Length: 46
Image (cartoon, rainbow, N blue to C red; front, side, top):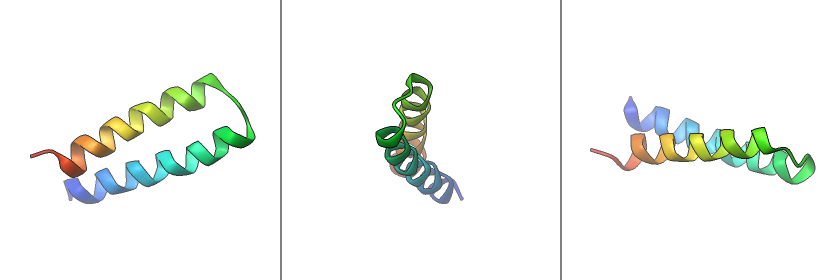
């Protein structure tokens, strides 16, 4: 279950990265960074 949540967070972050290219917003960048870190920790962590 933890790996699925990690993968979902990672894919959401990729989708938000595409959104950031269209609309340059600092809040989007912060959310992307947090979701990437959360996704990496959940998917690749112990």
